[in-house]
Image (cartoon, rainbow, N blue to C red):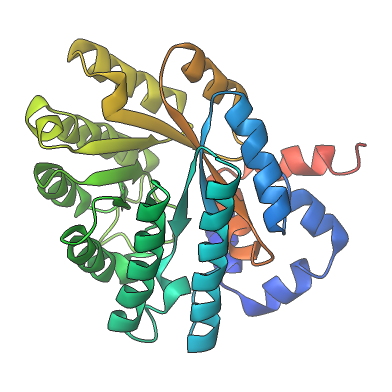
Length: 308
């Protein structure tokens, strides 16, 4: 029930206006968000890099329906790529297609993605296309495949809670794609997504095992194992060890502010770990989805909110 409530609030305009008005809300969001400015994002990235952690930077924003706003988002990301290059950060960028104009025009969005990929290619980094709700799954994969014919520095996301993901991950792995596998953070109907967490977990492990095969890895397929769940991490490590998969053929990914000790422990064990670092003023929907994923975070935040 708590998960459904937070997912509803993530898209409620009245709630956004109410919550973002208060200083304490912004302070609470800082558990999951590096800050509202590029400078704060750079500082957070540097600190993580110093600990041996890679970073994926997300300038928060989504559901843009104005061309000027979408073009501004592109400019913001181009500036971010310049900064990554300037400070030699071990980082790439993550983008949402609805922030780049997918709801306006697909070809417009595709052109915006090309601009980012060209710049990222120049500075020897990559762009990951975030997956949004199931409404956008087909269009996201269509754009991803189109871009892969032109660029080799683009990846995208598949969500284990969708029934279709098993087929999608097999196809994309066989194509040698770069994929972030996560569980999924949107409210989806039971006719297209597993309603029970236990079934999502089983599908996550199944999809991971289907992707990480010698045949797929030989084609250049690369998996970003995005989970904080100790059981999923252990299942991944078991498969990796049993199949003698090299550490440069995959990476773990975790969100900023969640299980930092687990992140460092995996690094100590010799694994690649990338932290997803969001920043910007449009933090409200992202914050609500993080609370929905694990409502216990609400109590953690309330306990710590008034501590110095």
